Structures are given as C-alpha cells and as structure tokens.
Length: 594
Image 1 (cartoon, rainbow, N blue to C red):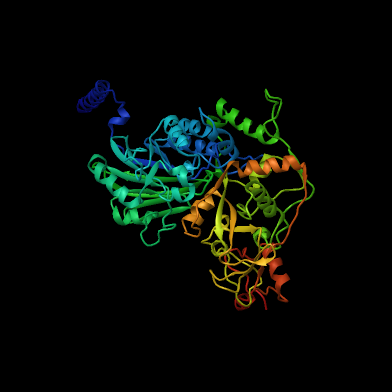
Image 2 (cartoon, rainbow, N blue to C red):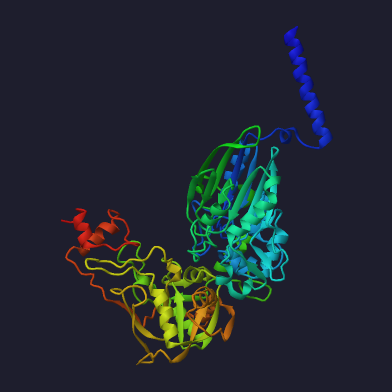
C-alpha cells in the first residue's frame, strides 16, 4: 500500500510539472537547473567554411567549419546544455571571402554556415574591419546571433556593436562579453575611421558592472592574445590585464595569435585555439543547486578526427559558393560577357623560388629571389615610386613552372591589400629597413645557419627594391642596414624619394611606429593581387629574374661539420633551427657532433 502511494505521488508530481510547463511555455528540460554547462568556442577560422585550400585546389585534412559542425553536433547529442561562440577573424582569409563574397552585397557563405551551426554570439576580430564599415554592417544584418564588441563605439559616441549578450541554459544565465582588438586602426587605417576603440580590460570591467547581478556565469570572448602585442606597459591589448581588473571572470576565450591556450588560473578557465578551424575549445562547468561552479575542465579538440558534416557540405548555397570559388581560380563556365572568371592567365617558364637548403628555413628570406622581385616590380610599375617594399607572407610562397592561375597569385600574396605611395627621406627609409631587419637573430661565432626572432612574425619582414643594401647580422637590432645606394650613389639621410608600400604596412609600421612623417599621396584603385594578375596576363609568359640588390653580410657559416649537421636536420634527426641558429660550439657541448 505504501509503495502504491509513493508511485501515485511521483506520478502526480510529474503531471503537475508538465502542466506548469504548458502554462509557462517552457519545455520541462528548461525548468530543471543545469548541473553541467558545456561551452564550445572557435577563433580565427579565416573564412574556411568547406575545409579547402583554394590556392592549391585541395581538400584539407583537419580544418574547416564543416568538421567543426560534426563536432558540435556530437557534443549537442551528448550534452543537454551547450553554448557556442566565435572569437572573430572569421569573415576574411581566402579567395572565396576576400575576392568574391566580401565585395558583394547579399548572403555570405561564412555567415550562412555560422547560422546553420547555431552560434550564440561572435566577437568582431581585427580582420572583420579589412573591408570597412559596410562589411561590419552586413555581418550584423546577416547574423542570427549577437555580434559583440564592448570596446568599440562610433565616433559620435553611439553604439557600434552590442557589448554583451545573456544566454540562458537550464535556468543558468551566462553573460557573454565581446571585446575586439583595439589595434584594428593600426592595421586598417581609414577603414576604421567610423569607429573608436578602447582598451580591453576597462571595457570588460564596465560591462561586468552592468550585468554582474543579472547573470550566474561571466564569460569574456576577446580577440587578443594572453600577452600584449604592442602595449607591453599598459596591457590595453592583452587578456592578462582583463584578469587583473576582472578577477570574477569565469571563462576567458582568447585568440588572434593562432596559439593553443589551455589553462585554469584560479577560478578562471582560459582557452585559445589554432586558426582555420583546426581546433575547437571545449569547457565543461559543473554547477551546484545554487548555480555555483564546483568543477571546471578544458580540452582543446583537434578537428583531424572529425569528418566534414553534410550540414555544411550539402547546403546548396555553400556548395554554390565553393564551386564558384574554384571556377574563379581554375576557369569556370563562360559568363554573359564571353569571359571566364578565372582560369589560367599565364605561364611560368621555370620555378621562381630556390629550394631550401635547410628544412623549414625559407630561402626566400635569406637572399633576393624572383618572387619578391616580381611583386616589387609590379608595385613600382603601378605606383611610379622610386622604392618598393613587400613581404613574403608565407614561407612556402612560390610560382611553380607551368600554368599560372589565381590560386598561384593568392599563394604569393595572400592578403587583399591596396598599394600606397608616400614620400620618405633617406633617414626614414633606413629606419624602416632597420625595423624590418629586426626579424633576424644576431649571428654569433659558431653559427652555421641564419635564424629568426620568434617574436617577429615572418610577414613583418619586408624586402626592398629600387635601392641596393646589405644587412649586417653581426650587428644588433637597429644597426644592421649598411651601404644603402640609390641609383648607384650612397643614399643620404636628407634625400627625398617616394616609397610604394601596402596599406597594412603603412598603418601598422610606418605610422604606428612613427617611422615616416608624410602621409600617403596616392592609393591604388585595385588590390596588389589584381595588379599581379594584370601584369602576368599582359606578359603571357614570365621567367624568374633576380637582380640581387640586397644580401646578408657579417656572417661566417662555414664549418667542416656543416654538411653533416644540415643533413641531420633535413632527415629529421635535429629540430628545424628557425628560432635558434645551428651553432657548432653548442652542438659539440650537447654531444651531437664529436
């Protein structure tokens, strides 16, 4: 009798709960407080929807939103309460985004994919500003979720993006604060003129003070790295400062520097992931009945173990965008005007880059090469400047012998930069050249290879045309540029000439580092990539040409052991000496050579 009474009581409780749910309009699952909350975060996807390298016309094995979709679907099947956020730099990064869909109105494959995945929020990254205010507004219009940037406003003081959003799962309210990178004006110049950016930590503090009594969990999604990038003293662009000023943050998502971050610091879980959708951050929070976090774990999940999802790969619009991009590169159907969108437009008579002597050490940064001479030649031709500066953005950049298509050009110039011309003095040009040469480590006796400062990304290393010069690596940073000659004569500090440089370098180096006083006097109406395409199309066939206008001096790389040591590196028996030179004296002490 007692057991029967208990069964009836339990049944009545269930019926009353269901009835209450009908009255409130809430499903039963939402009435129970979550005991566990799972947060998934992506960052720096850079337009990689399909999981494809368009410049190579190849599928990738471990990247892309299609793989992320499979992982997210699996987690949602396993866990009841899941939140999905993105940390920015999602709308830019490949030919599909930069050359096609970022330049037109209407739907966008990246935003469509994000809507399909059911994101709860995204933070604006610095690359979201590459195409100006128009694309920012378009992102906000297309997104079925809040677009966040609490440290950005319009110049008139009005809100430019939502500072935060509150998401509820299982009765637990999560406040999500988005913080964009305050250095965006440094890189995108006047494209950011409609906006005012502020330091990340004070902006986080202001938002937390507003929502603290409205939420149970505080999450900050910020498009900066843990450590400051430029403001080492003030920390305005580093996430560490957020934790100093806002110790109550429960979850901190970082990005921008494409590094894996997995840390629990006090009561704050900190996560960051590699770029292109290679990794997803997973954070699991266990909660008690008072909605307090009692346990926290973090995993960085590699997408190599996940197959692409049909949610993305079988969506009609995304298929169309993917195929249109491939047609643009390889030469698709003939258009109404009788021309093809892309395809082969030139031929290389030989491969432009010399092979690397040492595995992982780009020969294109150790000496003048045909790829850099081609880019600088095109910049000089289009700008009419005296001197040109350009970078080898990827260590693998090359023009292979044979057909040239748009993918080839993207491979040697991956950013959609425009070209500026600015007047400089001889002294200013030399200062800029010194800034660039800081990417190298200083040579010391015993070094048999040249290495690079790991804190100076390779894309910051510019090579110059129109002047002859030497880089003396026996000297410290700031004293390396020697024997600069212009038109065969020594370049004086007071001589005035014009410099061709891309818009990004103009903003982030020439102006941000106060290297050049003058402002730009000309801007190209098209991108540098477009100029390269036009030049090669006009030429038909191109051959590698190198004028060897610069060289590295002040080093002695000879040693009777050199061939032996390099062979060991190339065979994988020694680590690639990218950040630290192979030094015979050190190798002897380590017993590597005897």
